[in-house]
Amino acid sequence: MIETRILREFVTNPFPDEKKARKLLSAIDNRQISDLEFARGLFCFQIAFYFLAWLAVTEQIDDTSLQKSSIGKLHDEIRAFYANASSKVKFSDFVVSQAERENFIAALRQQLNEPTGTRIDTCRRALPPPSTCKSHG
Image 1 (cartoon, rainbow, N blue to C red):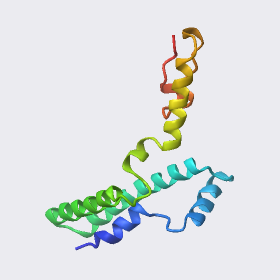
Image 2 (image 1 turned 90 degrees about the vertical axis):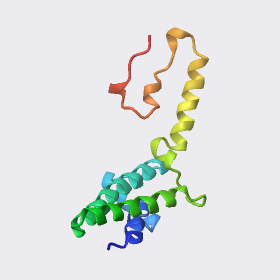
Image 3 (image 1 turned 135 degrees about the vertical axis):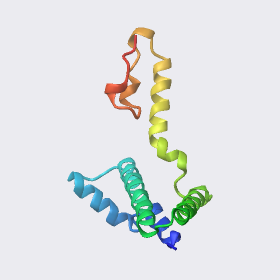
């Protein structure tokens, strides 16, 4: 049986040393990264490491019922980690970070105060890339 606690640690905390993680992520783009970029980078690594953990389970265990049991246990541990009140990150933060949410709300408030023909393009402040946004009429 695979020790799912170790895999959960790997998935939920891929960079135990934030300073080293920021240095690594900054080196990728040759510049300092913002807190938002760091959070997104961390999330991307967590997703990638989740799939590596899943692959480790499926490659190490031949019995499909034991695979399902181990993956189920891994999921339970990950859910418990993010549900814990002391967790710095909430699952809802993965969808839209607090900074992005505040930015989007500010843009919407500003738009409500603008005349119909001069409304701002909120697509530039939201998550979807501009190519997915429809023009305002």
